[in-house]
Amino acid sequence: MTNEQRHVLVTGAAEGVGRSIARTLAKDGARVVIADIRSADETIRLIREDGSAADQLHCDVSSEASVREAVAAAAELLGGRIDVLVNNAGMNGHYHLLEGMPLEEWEETLRINLTGTMLVTRETIPHLAAQGATIVNIASNVGKRGLPYRGDYVASKWALIGLTQTMALELAPRGIRVNAVCPGPIEGNRIEDVMQHHADVEGTTVVEMRAKWEAEAPLGRFVTPEEVASVVGFLAGEQSSAMTGQAINVTAGLVMH
Image (tube, rainbow, N blue to C red):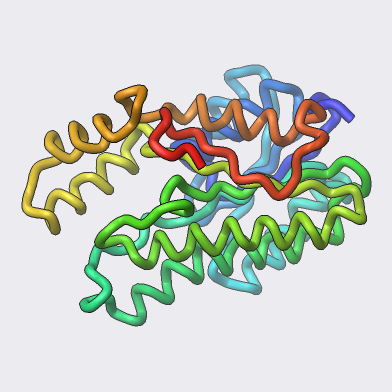
């Protein structure tokens, strides 16, 4: 089955890397449905401008009822068959040392970044095409390393990689593959917000944060949404047919394991 024939559900595609993922898959000929708590009007407009079609649905991944309703509606829009699920919806988390981490903020991050992925996947599995369907979870480079002040976010992404491997083992007998993508800092508004929060808690500036993080990557830069989206497209297609349970780095060399 080629991408041209695929029915795709992408969560969290109103902007940023999710938008690039939705556009990349649509350009490859896939039929795309976007599920997001925010309006994806601009993403839909861009996909149509690219010459493709897409639909959007409201979905709060932290709500079991919202997820159930959105996935059922997506399956209906896609004719009862979903070939590719991209779990991109998530949040940046909060910015505290562990000793000052409020429990409600810790639980909010895990609820959205980890439990949300579980809920969407659980509800999507009955609609996934047997023998050839794929799931791609968007994790993070900090799913493979620690980062001060980001304990909730780091924990959610480490756990997401473990969940990806478990999904891969459980779904392999059905011919369904599951992989994760672990981006480094991605150019865009989101990383600017992250750097500002880090600068605030670390007593530095955004310019200094960027210089520090870019210097940590051997290629000396952040990655682009399009670079991440191209790897998702690869994992969603037949070219990656021998890959499951993998966590692929797209980090400009920041993480190499």
